[in-house]
Image (cartoon, rainbow, N blue to C red):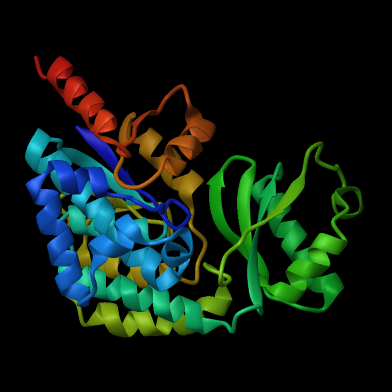
Length: 324
């Protein structure tokens, strides 16, 4: 039994999912289903789209859901991979819910297209941003955000992604972020100055996972309330509170609130570790989550990725070796 984890924004890349499409009928059917749901040629977007095309949030989100779902279906139907639990990073949570039979794939494709549009339009371009903060503890990041808002007179600014120990992304007002970049002196902010704190501004089109996303949350409440959420076939560890859930109505509520709340990825993976699940497959584009899991606990977690036919063959060999 495996834990399936599904990647979020930033994992997209031109050509993603092509090897699945070329090798597996179920992947071809998934691409057709996804394209039909949106009345948009998703094959063209994923295989021929430029980095800029795929970076548009309203394209990124359905493209990631599609490739993650195609990957999961190939693993399950072609190779008999069974999931005992799942989690997804931000948009990845939608793929986890589809995998667990909570939501329908076609409805989810339409929902994430709307989510991308709603997140993009919630804040005018240039008014919000995100910054990765390296080398600080979660409580220090909270102190930092409060310090900036108090001393700059502009906000909001808050933790958006707890990605791994020492890598936390903050999100909020661009003015607050600009002030922080100009005035980042850890020795002035903290009683005990951290040794290696640094900021890395992210090239994102909006300040995701903070209170500025409330309009997007309101839109997703409308969209997701109209969708049917079944009981999950296996637990989903949710971003919103880093707890494992199976009840459809709870899964829906936390998915709605997720868009303007922080992604508690480190905490979610600690919960997974506490459940004793060490065998993980990253389902979909890229290897971002594998990297985060190495930082969270590289000795405990054994993560396989799915970015090439070679990756899938490694999983197939592993299944053969462990099935006796």
